[in-house]
Length: 178
Image (cartoon, rainbow, N blue to C red; front, side, top):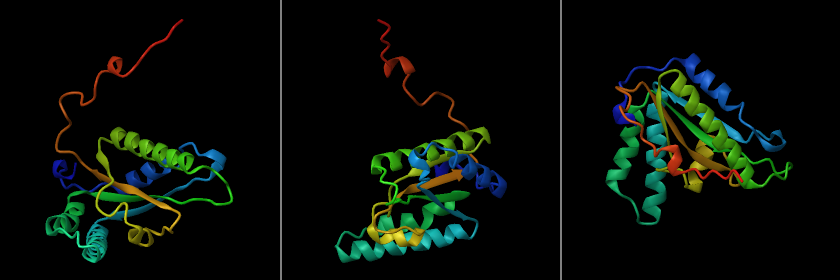
């Protein structure tokens, strides 16, 4: 989580490796539906401004604006070393069901998680803020049939969790041997 990051810069080459590994994910009919927009250094300020303004415009129009949320959108991105906006671009000629395209993008995201862990980086996928606003899509090169999946926050963690944060595998697994 951003509040748990040191503020140290993540090397561009590591981010590139993370993205290259993401694009190795399986994809039905090789549609490669993932799209990435990387925000680093001063680019994080641009992301903060873009998403806060989009939020204001959409929520003021429907009377759901919340000042606290708006301020969070202005400041939260600045706590990460890098944020990658992740989109899903549909290929209408490929006739691949949307669920399979989404699966491919989430496989790409898993590859990003694994790469970040291999480099000792902290990360998480945020699907809040403007993720589901139709008006946000053009900000990230997406069109109406596409999806803005979320924002992949990356940073150097202050410390790693001392304990496993997941249930034991035996609690979520059923073995059938006969």
